[in-house]
Amino acid sequence: MKVLAFGATNSRQSINKQLAKYAASLTGSTQIELIDLNDYEMAIYSIDKENENGIPEKAKNFIRKIADADVVIVSFAEYNGVYTSAFKNVYDWASRVEHKIFQSKPAVFLSTSPGGAGAKSVLNFAVESAKYMGADLKASLSVANFYNVFDEKNSRINDPAINAQLKHAISTLNLF
Image 1 (spheres, rainbow, N blue to C red):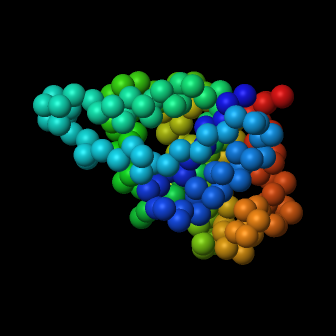
Image 2 (tube, rainbow, N blue to C red; image 1 turned 90 degrees about the horizontal axis):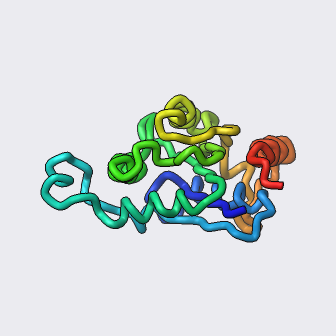
């Protein structure tokens, strides 16, 4: 099974990228691809730009990455309660290639933050939007207080209860 994972942010030191990477490692797959939204940076979407220049290759490449995957794991960073502008822009461009960008792939949506809310606002928004994005959403999980529950040295969650919840969420992908 090919697992595609990413943090829905362009932050280079993103805790959501760390969470997505760890979650992907729990799948047991030997085919994990962790992508970085910085590799898909494009001009801010507008119909005028699309009409003038067409759809950027980066948007097409993003859609191909999803098409090539068997499952998708996304960890959403929260900016002002919603998606990051980096994710929203990739989504806007990619949806011009394939309206339902996740192409009915089984998916797990995650979120985390340093605070007690665990970026639940954006996760709830993503869960509600999953059907419009074409995700076959199997599970979602918000991880609060990231720096208290994640061992950055060993790149793993060190809280047994949260780790069990994450393992359960990943198990819903039915990889085996």
